[in-house]
Image 1 (cartoon, rainbow over the protein chains, first blue to last red):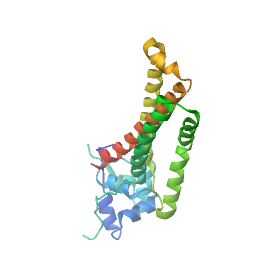
Image 2: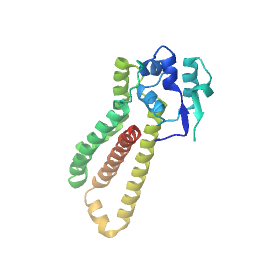
Image 3: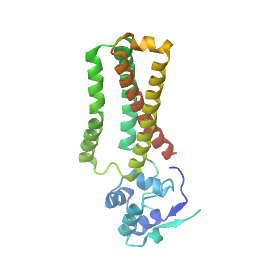
Image 4: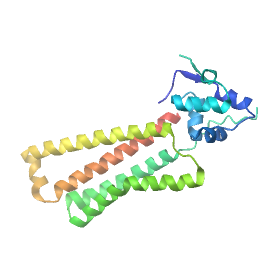
Length: 70
Length: 148
C-alpha cells in the first residue's frame, strides 16, 4: 500500500477551511488520523466512500480533492 | 502557516496490537512446543486451545476499550492490513497442515508423531499458533512498511 498515482489537495483544503487539524478532519470523516496522514503523504488511495466523505466535509466535489497524477 | 502539517505518525492501535500479539504468539508457541509436542499432556493442550479460541475476543475487547477512550481507532486502511494478515494466517496454516500430512506419510517422521497419542493434536495446535504469529507479524510489518 505504498505509493499511489492519486494526488490530493487535502492539506491545502484543510488550510482553507479555518486551519482544520488532521484530527478534526479524521473525526469528521470517521477515520483515524493515521489515515489522513497517509492520504496527505500520497501513501494511500482512499475508497470511493471515503473520498466522497472528505469532499463533502470540505463542501467541494471529489474531483476538487483528488486527481490522477500518474 | 499554522495549519497542522504533521507527518509524525504514532503507531495505530492495529499495529501496536499486532506487535504485542506476535510476541505473545511466539511465547505461546514455545510453551506449546514443550507441553503439547515434546512432552504432551491433556490439560496444557486444552488451555492452549482455549487461549486460541478466545484470541479473537481479546482483540475485540481491547479495541472496544480503547475506542471508548479515544474514538475511532480503525477504518478501511486498517481493514486492508488485517486482510493481509488473514491471508498470511491462512497460507501458513495450510502449509503447516500439508507438512504434517506429508510427515505422517513418511515412515521416519511418522514414528515420533505417533509415539504419543496427544502429539498429533498438539502439533496441529502448534501450527495454528505459528500461523497466528505469522499473521500478526505480517500485519505489524505492513503497518511499519506503509509508514516509511
